[in-house]
Length: 253
Image (tube, rainbow, N blue to C red; front, side, top):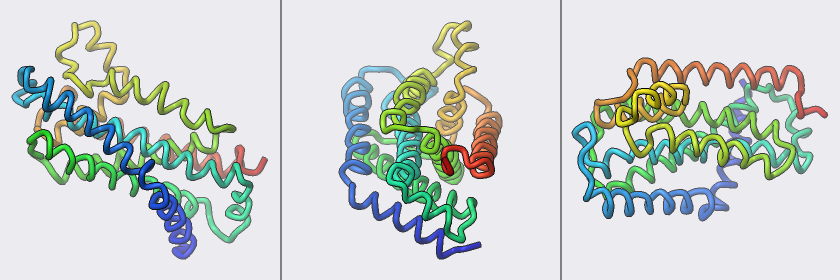
């Protein structure tokens, strides 16, 4: 394993983040904080509890998952798209670096940024809404597993995209709507029976439900199924990345 190459790619990507702190860190933290102010402090105090948890605390895992998914995808897709766009990707591909080391460098940096952002959002949420974490170890596992999985997904999007506009298509038109409809702001048990069954086809439901279980010990879906669904998506992403480097899809053309 070429640790020097991994460290070089990782440090380059992390340095880019620190050069754009306002866009990479401050903007998503501020946006999520506004949700806590509006739905947590202002409107949340007028709503009842859901599964024994105040509404303001109930939406914290969903909002955190919303930011985590979007930022993981955006960080990784932009990270690999830029060297493709500028042509420097050929320097990486011609270097004595395996595709595994390239992926670890780019995806590791993107996942690190997402986890940092998640911790900052959790810390900020404490200012507006009191909450407890019933299973902190599981919460950390869900946080890291989701960040790595969706950073891999973002890496795939960054290879697939042939323009800056396409980098935003999946996060804006697919991930965000699925998260809003996946129980980020409500329990799917509050829906009519027909819509409960339809909602189960939304993969984000399992992520939000499992993550919420780690906070409050209650979930809409069995936590084992949530972990299983996340691992299945992780394996699919790994298989797709392996195929990309094996065929050279949009990397060597």
